[in-house]
Length: 212
Image (cartoon, rainbow, N blue to C red; front, side, top):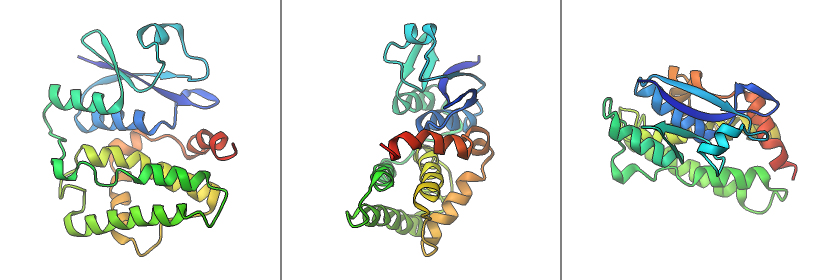
């Protein structure tokens, strides 16, 4: 049985996969679990009528389970784990929140116009905490095996890398070797290369937020 998933189309390129990290997280989960799926690319500035009928809030990603469209990547990933337990991607509870503040710290720093507001420092602290965790437990967050928490972080780290390099000329410091190694591991997975948005679409997605 092929699952249907609706994900964001690229800004200005409705036939190309867009830059939504939550959509990519759902796609990564499908790929890692080898679940056959068909994706619908949704142009968020011109949503198709059928999409709004099944999903009035108009959010992506949404996945169709037993004739019902379900939104929210947290919920989707939970259902996929339950319905398709093999291979397991369940994260041990004690590791579930590792790295959870990185994305919000990144967005704050990306949008910041004031170099002395502490947003860069806050992001560095989050990345350093991840580095320490990986040093003790790696190469993935829960050890040798990739789990759901890695698939949630991977798209966010990709956005961080692409957007900060473009808008701030900023890169993750070389001394965070475990984070850099972790990113390499994640980004080189077949599931990741198949589901990531092109860099220019990630940049186009952030442009209006950065220049607001």
